[in-house]
Image (cartoon, rainbow, N blue to C red; front, side, top):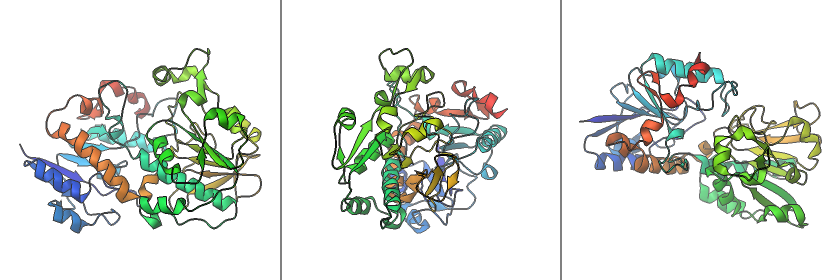
Length: 410
């Protein structure tokens, strides 16, 4: 039985990523003789149409012949084709009565309309974020988190240079190479400075990987709190370091994932001495915020926050909006909590919501590798359950695990 895949052009002008690179297209066409791949033309995509043609794909504006349509970010509602199967990051699973404003920088109302149209057009939606292994530990096969962490840290350090009045480094998208990022950051010198990096998932691992190439020393949470440092240092706070149960019972990551509402933040003691906070942790709308707006004035040394995960109104209350690759920073007056023009009373924020787009080729290649090895074979051949569990809408109907979204879209 023949099968046709299509790669759409991303609707966001600042996103040049692709779910499959030309080399990955070539590999798939060689491996699956029944497969045909159509590529929608794009002015922004980081690989040329010529490269896709050489790989064996077909370049067509009309992709309606496709059985399965692959994107990266949310698909333009007006471009949805009825009765098709779509794979992309819909950012809808956090949409519930506790989080009606939306996440990842996109208003919740847009996600409502997206889901409504998917249901109306009898579409099947498989969300990349939900494709996980069957071991029970929730490992995600797909994600751009590593490069979000890498670019987010680079941008946040650049914001530090801006606040210090120093010459800023070239932007990541200008360098357009992770190797060049590593080279340029390894040549920088830092004075006495204290940095917290939160999280222990994919984004945090990318952040920690990048910091290995800086001249900033990593210290343990205990030493961060109890020792005096004469140099720039950073500390990684894992989940058990920054949250605890309300009833003071022993921390369990599995329990925290299942019952985030039963936990509270304990990060305050770290932030009292911190100059820069880099938020690299996953946040559930039911889990506690890291701190409250009212606590900001207590953190007298905190001048910079890099919110890589960028949940609007989420765990970092100063993330009042997302920023763009073109304009990655904004500043907040800690008294009025209104945006200002970077003065002495400023808390500076980096909150770009599509960070991996600054290194589109590197991030697309890594994402596509996982798509080729861990996802597409289970769609083209036999599903072991990972695809079914990731299906939010099946032929126009919400699946049982996601039936809670019915209240949201209504």
